Length: 161
Image (cartoon, rainbow, N blue to C red; front, side, top):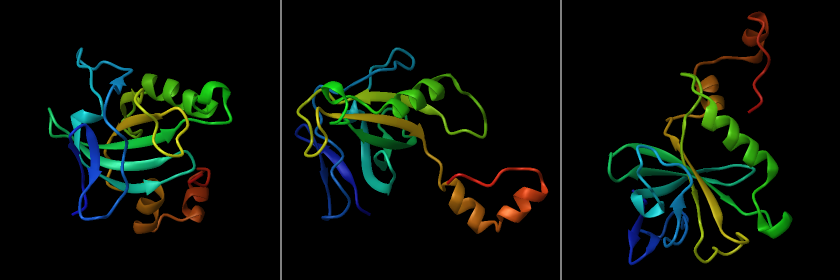
């Protein structure tokens, strides 16, 4: 199995697969769960599981708990002032911090990379740590044959995935 592991201050690829997550250094959590200050070095066994419009998603293990997590790496927006984060990402973070619902994946942590930026990531990266869910909504719907027609009959809008 492909993994990225912490070695000498960096997260590195094993077996030549996957992608490098980010250098580990001065990254520190923006949220403090139980007064614990976590950085990327607190996650192991990380490898890429997906990619979206705003970044790359990795699967990892939080070392102290052994919990499997999803880590969404969002490079800074070079078009934004001072290489900031896109506005819609800031809105997503604000909403997810407040939202607690059994049908919505939980945002566990936000880690801002303050060390040297990775290639193509402007002034560093933002890493959103989520609880891990084995499938995305689209895959679940496809596997369970939930069509737009079924949703329409139940008065539900079609998915935006």
